[in-house]
View 1 (cartoon, helix red, strand yellow):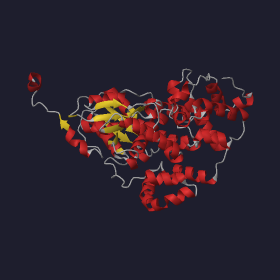
View 2 (cartoon, helix red, strand yellow):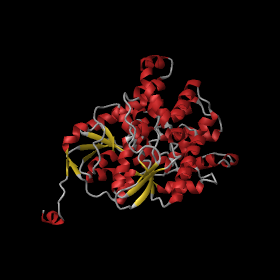
View 3 (cartoon, helix red, strand yellow):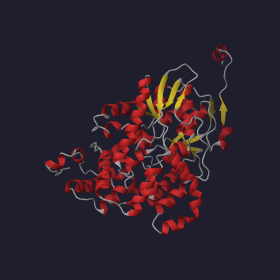
View 4 (cartoon, rainbow, N blue to C red):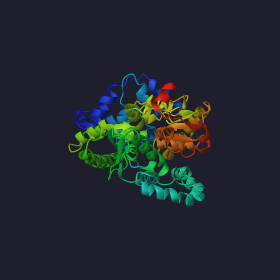
Length: 453
């Protein structure tokens, strides 16, 4: 693609990178076939190619973004399926990130939209605030109709999504070290996350138990918090950088205490952002090198467990698992086979979901800010899941788990919860009815018994 930036514009690092990305696009349109919003809306402006033209015109013109440009950029999920498909290697992820930050700086939104985005940025990344907000949600349920009539459909959607009962706090809550009782093989840092701690704290518990059984000490560092993904995708770049710096500071202190083999992330949306810390803070002299180091240590939990080996399960089952591959895992991190292989090794019967490249509609806060499109995508995903007739659905991202659970009765759990169950952990919440279908693997009393068998 030919671009027309001035020399003065190219002195801006953001525009210079946008120029490099735009020049790689050859207008082929292969991205449209895999774009979730284009699939359901059929509007070229809601495809990667269409948005690239809108972003190019916005950046080159140096004008304040129009309402049309903002509308179509806001409707992008950042599922990154287009990047997996693109034959030219267009870095759409960073291009749309730049566009969101540019729009946030240059084009103030209507007051109601600003209020909603401010609420999300000030509540969801902070577990204590988020927990109190969810506890208050039942009190607001009778007023959802009024909220929608006066234009606060996003707030009404958020109340709709709030669980009726919050789960108990995690067993391993707060900062500290969960030391393995086995022979120590590694030491890792776990990103405890923000919304996940509140919505499904059992994911962190399952992660810690699974790793500890394999001889791995798990550290939750004091001072670490939200990865920055939520505000980053809202275009609030300074806040995203501040949250990244806070995590880097907390984790570098732990690295200073002794070798760390990995930073483990069990929410793939967070993993994609943490693995990109080196790019996010590349222009920060005080943090660039440290950010690159942390990004190099970041591993999705399935990626790490597959690397260290998990051994034979202690339980075996006939349970059929439909594996939903989160966009941030398959497109953002190029992790597709490891979770399925681990589940199969653990004794589960694993099936793929048709149209696995299409997003479920969660995408961070997308299902709150764009509820109509998100619902269409969720219903499409649920219909595809049901064709596989599974007993349970496994996913590697809390956003996907919450989104899918709201659209069907088939239970949805994190991959690591199923692995923990097969390797000695408790039955995951919501799967109690499946407990009779998993049995303990007999243990030989002597080596000779095993050999003779």
